[in-house]
Image 1 (cartoon, rainbow, N blue to C red):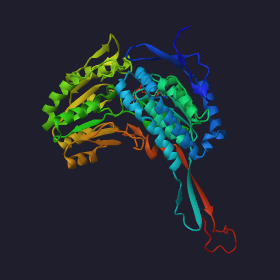
Image 2: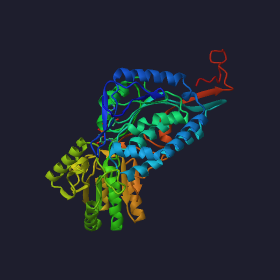
Image 3: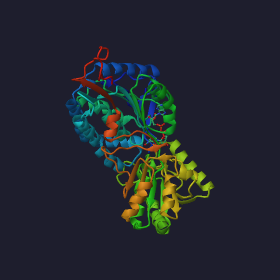
Image 4: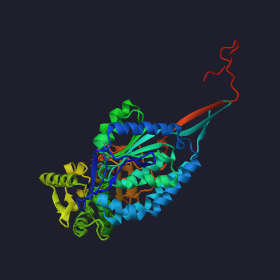
Length: 496
Ligand code: TXE
């Protein structure tokens, strides 16, 4: 027997009996196995969903007063905030992301619980201007048992965003974290229990996407699926969900343009590019993976960018000085290398990096890489999901806009300029779900987050996310219209 910890699914308020099939969770910076988790079978998934349906129908949460939901989610925020250091350590280990990033990111996650707790408490129904002596109330009800499929790049942030919105609205949640980094999400089970969430309201089920995720999403009794992942995963689950009339929120890939306009100070432009492109080693859906630089800025920008990228400290993620950590897997390293190779074949010029690397002889690392290329190249069009960035010289504002929009993705985009009118003009013409002016990656629980085109549909965050976890019930209260239709004298009788 191995001494590795095994963390089994969190079901009905406890860690379930471990499955026989298990999968290993690897620290991508050291290639050591951190723990094993369940590889959950179809039979178990189906039984968890059946139990969750009973909990939704008969359990207290779906009928709880909004003030009770507020209290539980607020307490969960307090508990999470008090445990951030332990979550930071775990998140750094399982993702290989630098500890300085994880500290900054995780410190804000309790805000999602606070925000959705508050929404639960203050959200109001409506009364419509219904004609006549009638009062028509619209109330929002929880939708039911919802499945949340979450990724490995921001494991705790993305799961918490989704869980908070769904619980605030009164649903029963089954979350399947990524097989690559499920450990921090698994810890949420006992945290919510301590906060007072009734057992069975948050179920955490582990396994491979192709198996456990698929089994979950194929179940016809779900009320909603909320996915953050790849387009291929969306396509794998969409047809069944459509037939089963299950709505999907999908937060998929991106190819965010970083539009750098000539009025910018070159130092700021380079800082903007570094921040947009290399946070999380480029593994976020809004990574600034296309630097679209105006010709008037280009040469100065490139010279400084090269110096700054070459000086980035790739290293042990647990070292506070490390700026660039690991990528998630060997597969990701290979994918980055293949992108570099194709970019060079297409005439691209590697300005920085371009190679896999190791730290202390181990780990899945890739050098921060910038490749000068042209619009329409493989690197300009397709998502790497790693630290390999396309640099494109643009002759004009118009060309920056047209290159920015010439993509099947439309999630994030940033526009950087000191020229107020130009910044707004360009931002106005960019097709993307999220456009930043003089910023990138800025995020808040109140701010809807989601893309257009193949970047997905629906929103995380904000009122939009909360309402997407509800269904509207219309109650029509008649206090003056008589049901006289089949009487003899039906003058002015009202039908509808
Ligand atoms: O994601 P997957 P991967 C995008 C990004 C990246 C690509 C692939 O473009 O290059 O996705 O990354 C579960 N039924 N993003 O392969 O596989 C899986 O177990 C049900 C964008 O890591 O989509 C995991 O829990 N579930 C993104 C989740 O889907 C399935 C973050 C995501 O994994 C499944 C991550 C199936 N058939 C990747 N197959 C973002 N928007 O931030 C997989 N899963």
